[in-house]
Every structure is written in C-alpha cells, then in structure tokens.
Image (cartoon, rainbow, N blue to C red; front, side, top):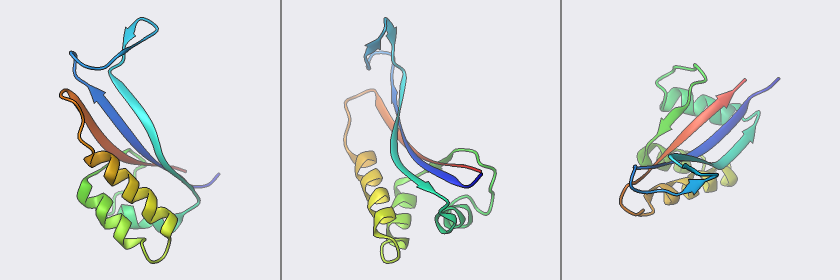
Length: 110
C-alpha cells in the first residue's frame, strides 16, 4: 500500500438545471483534476497548511485561496503539481450557468 492523492472537481446541479442520464436527473458529477502516487511532500503540505494538521483521509474542501497557495508553493519545486492546481483554480473560477455550483476537493488514501 502507499499514498494515493486525488484532486477532484465536483459539479452540483440545482433542480431546474442539469441533464438526464438513463432516465434519471443528474444531480452531481465528479471530475478528476489530478492524481499523485506516493507524493508525501504534497500530502504533508496540505495537511499542515490547509487541514490544520488533521490527517483523517476525509475529502478536504479546497478554496480558490488554497488552490492559489498550493500552485505558488509548488511552483518552483514541482511544475506539474503547480500546473494541476492552477488548472483546478481556473476551472473553479470559470463562470457557470445559473443553478450550477462547483467545488474542488483533495482526497488522500493510504
């Protein structure tokens, strides 16, 4: 076993928006915005700086500010990580139609 880290985008649709799949209304979609295997530096940074030291492997909501912090923090040391967080931030800030809401989460699994 090892550390798997996921950056997920969640899209939520209000009752009057969204679309159907197999005859059912889609209420939420998950997007894969990033994935890292055994990247302990990234995980430790997120736990210490964003989760206030709590490492419980629960999904952690990342705000625009925390995405900016992570992109800047890894900008010089790991450009691929920085690019993933910059792209997630751009996705989060992209305007959506009325009734569509978005969030970004960091999820770790040991």
